[in-house]
Amino acid sequence: MKRILIIFLSCMLLLPSFGSFFVYTSFKLNQEEISKTICVQRKMVFNSCNGRCELQKSLKKYADNEKRMQNNLKEKAEVVYIQNTATANFKLVTPIESKAKLFASFDKKPISVSNSTFHPPSYFI
Image 1 (cartoon, one colour):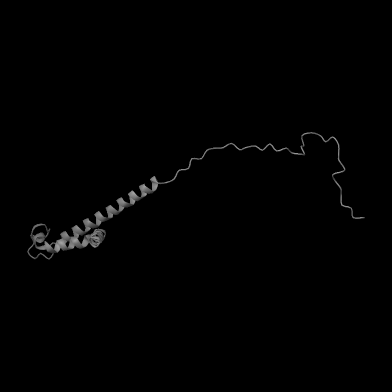
Image 2 (image 1 turned 180 degrees about the vertical axis):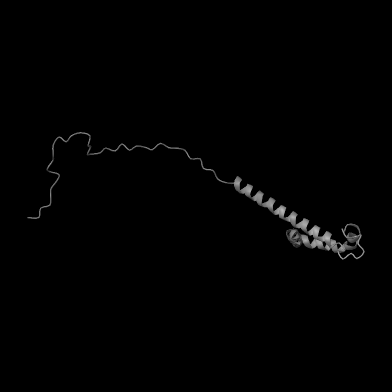
């Protein structure tokens, strides 16, 4: 049962890559009918086309369809990418002012000078 499922899924994955092959085989199977009914040059006496013009149209149509499908997939992938973007809500926070006490404030005039805290180095001992 697993083998059948694996083979089936593999065929489903590989099926789009064989699209032009299927167009060509269906053309070869129906080439006589196509050359008699659909071909542009069917009324000519020496018809060298044999329906190949319809094969070219079919292959071009398939290639255009494939390109359109790829563009749709790219657009869907871009939409998914855009929808999954993370948004960050930033809030403006007012800065906190520090109320640390400064020991030296320059607001007022000095009252006195303390000599005990400052001692210059003595070179002559």
